Length: 495
Image 1 (spheres, rainbow, N blue to C red):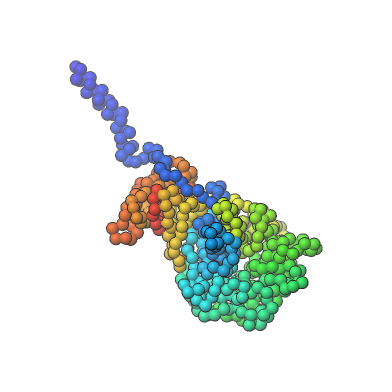
Image 2: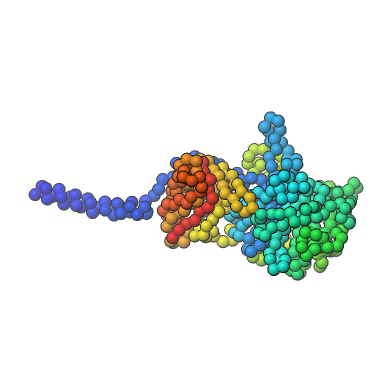
């Protein structure tokens, strides 16, 4: 009888633990542990979408819309050091590359790597610098073609061509597009800061110039705009002088509705003017023709120091996506977070709203930045260089082929990922010098791990795909965290 009772008790106990064993076997509903590594610190707050990226600097944003995405091209501010290893003031003399990022949701940005423009490694080997880029696209002979304009320091403007918005870029012209030998350009103090627009009829226009001749603070007369030839790498006619009040630099040219907007940065000697123009602010003028004449309308965006406490030059672009307009500019929050000073800048963006009169309201700069336009689809391959936030990450690559590297505690965040109800596995393409793990966490990097993807040393030295089950439903911010050194190329969620 005792043996029978013991057997019954064992059977009852087995029936009690059987469901638990089944749950563990399925890997579901059991809470996984937190990430077993100290996370590196981000230069960007979790609740803020400005700056757009923090893995390196990027100034003078020039923005192009193409196929439902905004592409942002930027001066690649490079940290400069003195002989003692201390960061010194940015001289801009080492800048020969351009940075490019893009997004279709305006919160997660894909870093396409550097564009090698000037110097021995650049597409334009004859150029010494690559400042203040802008870009445009146009259908020529039935084929879409892309154009990247840049300034060779303050003494001329060049242009590169490509068959995609991320390159590879080539120098089809072989020389500067705008020089002081071009009519009406010899007296332009700073022959730089291009802005390009392709009108609805396919005609291109290039605005440029800046600087203040002695005694001409209120009317420098150094702004220019010129019609481009059909091939976009030559000019058609002579540049037209623009009468721009209190001009400093940073031309912009856009069509909004049936009007043309010329935007620019005012100089820092505006005190006492009767137009209410303030120092280093983005101003706007309107015309019925892209070549002008333009009428001054008002101030669009005060100097960024008005909002963020760090004053400096103010360089902008206006861009439209899905019928809404946005202002892109630069600020220095990453420099501040790093504890350095030297005018190393990062890109930011805020929404432009229009009044009942059809004119833009003055833009307010915020660190909150833009709202996410749509969730990320994880069931299609996502580049590892797509992120809203990061810490300890470096991006490598060029011509649109990019990947990231990290060390123990490095992480990326992809905001607003829609896992739906059928997410089964997380697959990562990566390679590492030693075995390590990528941990997936939702919403809070200190939260529970929902997937652990083990990365093994490759046999052939090439990236490989690794996967593991994932527990995720609905829309969440996704953190991918590594516990060791690795290269990460892409990821995808499988059903």
